[in-house]
Length: 447
Image 1 (cartoon, rainbow, N blue to C red):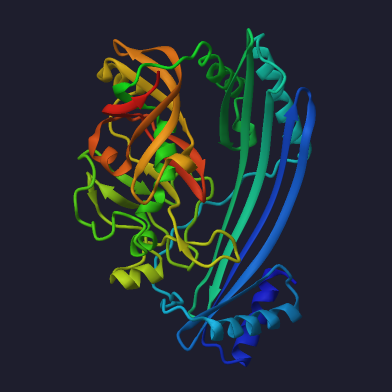
Image 2: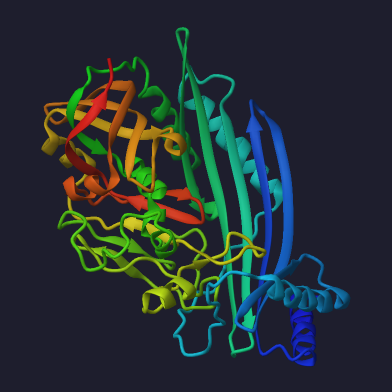
């Protein structure tokens, strides 16, 4: 059966079994990826899958059931299992089926042509060739990666919603390994968009430059430093701490932002945006996992916390409207809360101008140890970092084996400058982005 045929079957069975409040959530994905090592295909894979989740409310309790088999028999089983599941639920959390009334954005027509496996392979091999051509020190271990994906999201419910989003994207990544003496250094560069738009020479050059820039890196004395985070580095922090802006986390006592709406929590220049339709969004969405219209919103505006991110349940508890951030990790998941494309709004100045403002200090281009070294509940972090010394406003020698420490909530208040060079990274569920950020007098542990 097609999804549409399955949906009609579920509608009929729900009416037969007198289920008044229910929802059907459907996802389908198709992907192809190729990875090149040396001059050969290391891995080539194709993947496709689909699934539906039926959620119903009976006597105030929500029951879930999911399947990957779109057959008439499974349509009936899905409804029966969800009703049985609702009987066993002991949670007091109120559940909702969203109704009509929202205004939904319109996605532009998806004109991205699906590249063939051969075209992806040809592009990956070409990128690999470009990587080796950039520098004679490029060593075996260098790899190229290309992937294409197409996703469909659909939601139908008994309250009149019948929604669908489609998205397609191509990913490109170059991973360069440089041999210098007895030391090895790695670097990377990635792109997403349309296969024909990728500048493979530029991707290769950036990946190799990233690796070469670390040659000769050493630590620095421990102390307080003016720190310039590159956009990608600060985006890593933002992605790690994005959960603190979830109303679900706050209501469970796992975010210090509980009850802080309307209060000053960051420097005046800080505006933090969640935008499901941002041009850089890998997968643009017009509705969330509950059928609520997804829209652009300022979570922090000029330093003031304007809103936490809500789904229908957390919004009801707080006495506010959902922000359209009900998220499902997969078709079978329960509804949580999360951002779409989450980013720090650019202000003014290039990375070079922020370095000049710092004078002397450290430029951090990347952090690691985020799972073990960052605590989203308290905001404390102690992270391995790499980058460059900053002397007289310019990047000089590379730096590694340092640890930058602080507190995320304090850091938001102590941001001194924000640049206009917005960069994005791919994170869980979406993208996070930031321009370069200057923070003065941060604790750095080194030698």
